[in-house]
Length: 398
Image (tube, rainbow, N blue to C red; front, side, top):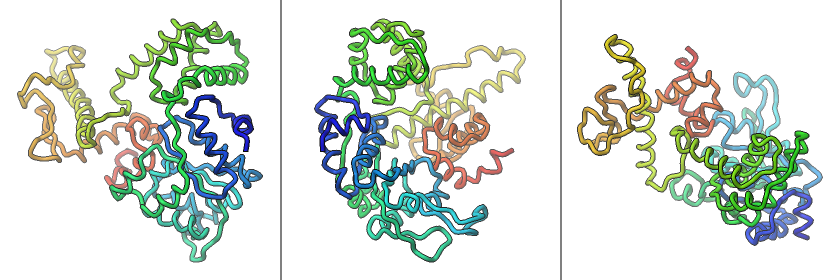
């Protein structure tokens, strides 16, 4: 199969060795009816590679079914995947086909497969091995003929070692693995990507476009794109809008990139990549949330005291590392992993802090679960699980 044909049909852009290797693998696996696991950082284009495999397979006459496993709440994921019978649960007012039944004779793309609950993984394994599944509330097995393409930005072998992902399912999905390079490993493709994104955006919005000067492209190549292709696409679209159709110069690019970096560094609520151990990173994030609670308490104290101005000094330093005074600092008790101490709040368990953060965030976003989960740095399914675990349903409705 010709790589150029695959690129034209799928819209994959790039001439770098890294992306050419990916395209060669797509050409090899597309005609063969086997499971494929696509790995790579967020924003590297895993879905477009899955589509390229499907479009060049024997199943291309049917539409590919895409499922974001991380976006489906744990309580309904089996119903979504395998369907349900009427009366299977309270709101099941009729029979419903699941994604696997709808994808019969086609391809199903399971994105964020690492977020799938262990109980559901057992049923996924059965579908892969035998083509059989049982809808929720039914006693009879159904058959489906699907090709499975899965994707993840996590290290599944690491999840297997931690008992969070089934080893047998990992081996079945990992028949062929296609690792996608981050954008920083294919910088020579940036000029082609920028031109593609700019033309698509300006044509669809009927906007004037005068192009990017070469120095502007060089400035973008010197930037570290942590969000990969997705971040680059958003940047190209935003700078075209902000510069009102002018020819984009390096000064414009550097100014906008500088503003973005400054805004990102100031936003303490954004999730971040850290090389700290998981428990240390978790504690640091907890301290940040605790500080926000402390600010609220201090503000209320100032409001209650007429002698103090409530607008003074609302943003003290997060942690005074030079001080060792327990009464003035936030810290996690050395003799217990479960308590956080602070003079203005008292002792709080980590669970109490997490519950408080969830309730406050949901109220701030008017109970919008998706927006709240994004702000809290967790998947929507994880947020649903924690709400049920802590019994917060009634509290957040009040």
